[in-house]
Image (cartoon, rainbow, N blue to C red; front, side, top):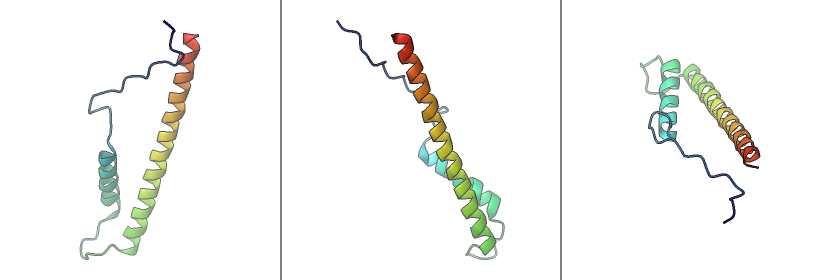
Amino acid sequence: MYASPLPSPLPLPKSKSTLTSPTQLFGGLVDNCFTACVDDFTSKALSGRENGCISRCVLKSMTTQTRLSERFAELNQAMTAEMQKKQF
């Protein structure tokens, strides 16, 4: 029988504490930005300052999450390449 040229995929962790669902990420984003930016409850509408703060907060959070995802993919690719080198 031939040896597989590709390494077997790494098992995914099954613990709920190690995986963060998109819903949890979004919930955390909403909670963090709301807490940091909204402080005037005398009106139903957001003030201009609150609206700007929320926009900046969401942009920062999304930019950070995107960069973390990119970095994780880079590290995963490097680990996969290293495992392939060790197999041959």
